Image (cartoon, rainbow over all chains, first blue to last red; front, side):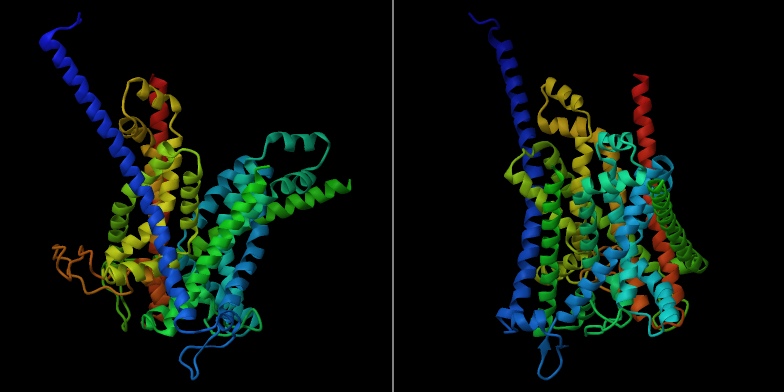
Amino acid sequence: MEPIEGKAYMEQNKRSRGMKERHYWEEWTGRIYTSVCVVFLVAVIVSIVYFVASKGVATFVVNGVSLQEFFFGTKWSPDGEPMSFGALPFITGSFAVTVLAALIASPLSLCAALFMTEIVPKSGKRILQPAIELLSGIPSVVYGFVGLTVIVPLLRDVFGGQGIGILAGCLVLSVMILPTITSIMADALSSLPGGLRESSYALGATRWQTIARVIIPTLLPALLTGIILGMARAFGEALAVQMVIGNAPHIPQSLLESASTLTSVITLSMGNTAMGSVHNNALWSMALVLLLMTFIFVLLVRLLERRNRI
Amino acid sequence: MKAKTTDKIATFVICFFALFIVVLLVGLLGFILARGVSHISFDFLTSAPQTLRAGGGIGPQLFNSVFLLILTLIITIPIGWGAGIYMAQYAKPGKITDFIRLVVEVLSSFPSIVIGLFGLLLIVNTFNFGFSLLSGALALAVFNLPLMVRTTEQAFRAVPKEQKEAGLALGLSKWKIITSILLPAALPSLITGTILAAGRIFGEAAALLFTAGMSTPPLDFTDWNPLHARSPINPMRPAETLAVHIWKVNSEGIAPDSKDIAAGASAVLVLLVLAFNLIARWFGRVVYRRLTAAKRMD
């Protein structure tokens, strides 16, 4: 015995099958569309690594420049006779500005983050947080412009010489990475479980004792994550540094001497070299070094995060 | 007693440096605006740049920046939102999801100049798009996607779980729930995130040197056929943006007033980026107020 007979039954059956079909299609369009987007991201990263690596490796494989010459050679003369492609001056320059910028910016950032979370949480957030966010919004070419019109003449007046060089570069970079480091540190500080802080105060510790002996040791991996991410930004920054560093292709003897970084050389020379020439390939090798450094920075951040979870 | 003195000194030092940062920001913004605003005029904003004579403007550059921003958003929004939705709704915890997260993280840490070089190699040379607005927009999309994916994922995760469950109880398909329940709820934070991303796109220069190029052909603002070489909306023409122009004027400008042009252009760029930030905040606040008011009425 069927509850519904004839036409009515068929009608209902058809409608529910139609619903099911539409359901099915909707389910799959969503799944496929979003998956395609994700696959696109993966394809992009694979092709970036592939293209940059294939060009960068060509210097050593096709053009026969030795790894030793590239990484430890101090002479960069792509037009000289004989040509030499020592990239050590640029690698040193990149590391020098990055480390110095981190050394300047990290203590400042830590103070700012502590000010926002430990000393005056309310008004600190209201004044300092927007300031930090605005700082991070200023484009890097504008930092370069300010560096060129304020910092370089200032250094020239104070120390003599040209004013351009490592010192000018790392000063500009330190202001640029300040917001990155501060916001990560402030996030870490405000995510600290309340109990730790209160128990320290309950034991009669002063604020500074609490900060120095409880908060900072507990959060050290997270604070270091901020510094590493700041350094990653400094290492890859191109235009602001290029504008103030002077771009001389040798290892500087002092902080006030003109120098170069990997990014500044690529910026200046890439447009003037023919695709496929040794000079051009050597620039791609530098891009490959930048890429590898990015991986190292990400790896460091991941290691620190794992420590932080405990 | 001694601990208290140390505490006071430490507090003073921390406050001093925090204040120092505020002063630094005020000084920085004050300098950029004081140096540049006096140079901004209607003529400066609309006229074409001069290479040798004084009195050049930034008209085409400003137009290029806005047009490039629009092109980039057209490319980024569907892909970025899609991938973000995948991460928030479809991805199951496991090796593949961890891998995608790593990809997003690495992609967002790549230096923008490396993205520019990749664009030069693949888009400009291999795909043969040449130095063009479209190449620039594609490179900027790569540069900007990870950020977009992350904000989208966060926006979708922030929607209360009950809303999704209500949709499931009604027997809706997952995609229907996403598009008609979750998306409207997440839209305010999506838009705020997108406006903030737009500010970043606007100021970016390193990735554009090798993709959109460093020059602009003379534009004919009466010709709106996108296929003509001199038309401003032709996506296949080279285009120098405002940020690239500032860099170029600073490093190789030979016009007698190049310093003033750099200052004026910097002020315009900073004002626009600040405007993007303020609009994003204002929008977020307005929507938040609306949503909470709506809740109160229930």
